[in-house]
Length: 462
Image (cartoon, rainbow, N blue to C red):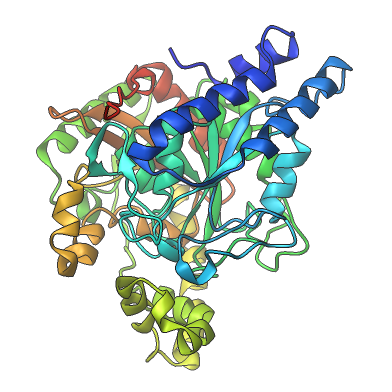
């Protein structure tokens, strides 16, 4: 049975487990499984072992930094790492080596985490399948014939396959939550501005979020504790106090009001996902939840994403269009016709949406939806029909995308499996800055079920 970060941390602190041994176990699994899953682009094996030895020495001397000290963690490969290449899964950046760490990396290092490698993704995070990558497609640990989701597909596949014990991903329209759902693990998109995006290659500055990927709610809370907080170097970072997330989840939620937005979020569901959600609501009711039907005004205009993505890449596209994967280039160029004035108008509309959505939480405490309306499709469906790739991705993302526009915290946690053995995800969202409440409700659900305990059995070719 997979051990949690908190269990591993306790064993490390008491001298029962060596960070070096734990890191070498992860490196062995990467060596064994990555040829099948393609979850990692760069494995920092020498750096990781060196950091693990340093961690072991520090802990032995009584200098314990906290629960991430000595724990192997992965990074989506658009998060800058000083001296280690950061590619964004693109030929454009295949040899790019940053001089400085991203702020989130600085915080992980301060917490004593072991940085074990850089993980594959959908090129420049512009897609929900992780099929489009200069380094090849990511595959799903539950069945490598299926996609892992995207854009943080390598990170979720790596955590699900125990190649590392947590990862940091990014989420612009569901890129943490959707692959977490398809890979059967946890993925948390915090409130916009809760975690610094400084040093993270942007897709859409107004919609990008940075957050943890883990195997349990407590693990996600532990990682969030280390990376959350104000960064004066990030103009979009918010100076809002953070909570003791791990302590908060232990408290049983009382009189919780669960909003269920059936219109839009529960439409056109796969029957097995629909059935799983009925069971989810029944479990929450056993915790005293009051389930309320609510109506939401759901944003569907994604012109701002297109405009900001193109603005970030315009100069590169002019100079070296051939270095982009053709489908990524097509998506990037879709924003070329959106004027600066139109983009500014859309930013103001997003600000208004974020102000207005707070009113919903006068009547409910959390919102509950399926993370995706459908389970993971086969990889062959997407690669054999490239003209249908974007349309297929978008069928997986309608329930996650609005929360990026609203900037609300939202988590995906496992809530079942299809008859064919593919994971199903539950999405729980809360008010701005209410990550603690979202995690608390997720933890209450997790304790009442066993979905998070299931592990993929990966078949490695001879």
